[in-house]
Length: 327
Ligand SMILES: Cc1cc2nc3c(=O)[nH]c(=O)nc-3n(C[C@H](O)[C@H](O)[C@H](O)COP(=O)(O)O)c2cc1C
Image (cartoon, rainbow, N blue to C red; front, top):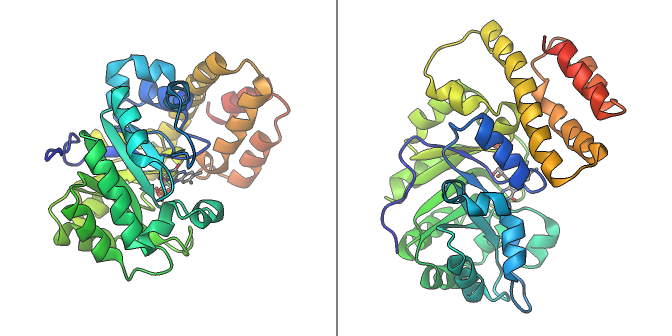
């Protein structure tokens, strides 16, 4: 068991996001905005029959990120487990490959995942949860963190879960302030993050609806959390980590000018990394379009701007719009 969490206080973590934070995406952001302190893979499901192959684990993590020790150690490996899977074996395999940080997904709200008694479902079944946590802790000697919502149907088990994690030797807890049933409705409630920092000495990582530098300052002040993790806010403003760390105040106009400068850099770095993985421009364009959903929110007439990007027929057209709108 590790008593020292490797992440220093006030760190900024880039959240795992299935379908987005694959190796190419992470490398692009790591190269362009190295101020993010930690990344994570999205979840790898522990198989209920058989075991992972080494190839499968490495493909999920990405071979470039794996072979570079600095990049490997800057990325947590996330798993999704239920009671049926051979979690001890999965942990041993991940450990044998030299991964130093394992994260357990306890927040996934997907119906399919929850029907298979994994993800956020486990927050409603403390017996299964304890077994899985014990299995991981016993078989994985390095940093072991969990990423949770505040409950499944409701928040009634919240503090019991926090105590369970503390008693079983979890090294840090990321908390997204919504129940599973809330999905993404309303605004994440940071009150639970504050409650957890008072209830345990384990580092608490605050997550949910952090969009701006002011939000970062507010969540640290209000909750006294150890560090924070950003998902959608990081997708909208991947340069938020450098913006926060430079500690310089910016007005709305400055922020817009910075946005216009950073967007082309971001897309060009993504293109470089995606091109190494897939040669098809159509696939890259599809991804670019998905990132257009909120990155242009702050532009004047943003609905029209977004429509232009979303309707681009090819990558060249998308890039022409980037030149036009970001000049
Ligand atoms: C598209 C998408 C995919 C996600 N995939 C994962 C995942 O694989 N593992 C996980 O723990 N959380 C996942 N999440 C949840 C985020 O990591 C984060 O906890 C959540 O979005 C709340 O933070 P935010 O308000 O900063 O977005 C995902 C979120 C989104 C939007």
